[in-house]
Amino acid sequence: MQIIAFFATKSWEEEYLKDKLKIVASDLTQIFIPEILSKEHLPSSRDFALCSVFVDSLIDRTVIDALPNLKFIVTRSTGYDHIDLAAAGERGIVISSVPSYGENTVAEYAFALLLTLSRKIYDGAHRVREETRFSFDGLQGFDLKGKTIGVLGTGRIGRHAIRMAKGFDMRVVAYDPFPNESFAKEFDFTYLSFEEVLKNSDIITIHVPYSKETHHLINEKTIALMKPGAYLINTSRGGVVDTPALAVALKQGRLGGAGLDVLEEEGVIKDELDFIVHGHPEEHSLKTVLADHVLMDLSNVIVTPHNAFNTKEALTRILDTTVEDIVGYIKGKPVNVVPR
Ligand code: NAI
Image 1 (tube, rainbow, N blue to C red):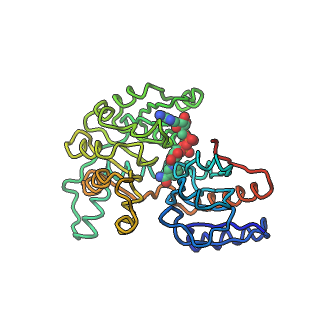
Image 2: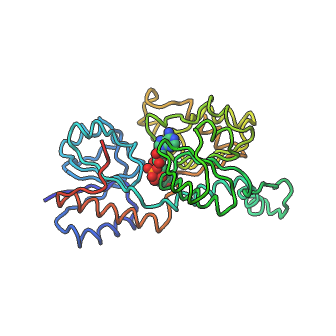
């Protein structure tokens, strides 16, 4: 009999998974562990061969070494940069993900962040609710129509963002090492070099995966190429942006504002008490954590807690694909396998 351990699922997700798996994988024993999986949070019972995690778990070599029976990981996410692929590969562990569940969901959120900044929605709502002051003084914004948006990464989410930008009558430019020319023709936008996109855009929205190549893609040097007063939207991964460099550029007024759903070191920010108790300062950049706090305090910055994926429709699609991934693995035909 095989055992699967689900980490950090909500109670409704637990019920949904149990209902589905009862029908398609009735022999599979399921255990639900409320905490994330990381080296600081290793479960007491470790005899499961299958496990399912979300992006807040951190499966590094230490975790993999501590789970000798582990053969299969399904991450309930598109990104898989929270799993050490090399360490898993050496042990022959199969990893499946959810390649597509929320391209519209995340692109809609990128625009929600952008509109929050461009129309000062947060400031207006805060004023009315917290100060009971019904006045538009100081809340002047700017139109999206006619502005140039630079889309970094024209994969599933980036392409949805382009469709939406076109709906707002924006001019679109994009960079992707693998340009999709037929899509560019269909939606009437231009691919430029990375540098040209930065130089030409009033707004940059990031939709690239996090990898060694995209680590700190936006840094002091590349920020210097951006238009003065440009806006940055990041719904991809925090590590794509050099946080201290962004904090300085915003604080000095070099950039107009930023909408960030993801932060470098967001794991530490999420549970600072846990970091104080279990964390290892040498493994985390405390300068970055400090820069995160600077960003969270700035009035022209909106930070949200990695929430772009979080709609009812998207989460249901995630769980459905997770079940397909599990069934694929136990039937010996894994699907949505992460390339090594
Ligand atoms: P995708 O794999 O469909 O597209 C990524 C695109 O980025 C590809 O076209 C690729 O060629 C391009 N790319 C790679 N390196 C690049 C670079 N250096 N510069 C420009 N483009 C580059 O991925 P998808 O589904 O569009 O998702 C993108 C990322 O969004 C995910 O990897 C994930 O990290 C993030 N995400 C965030 C969520 C959230 O809740 N905030 C939810 C879902 C995804």
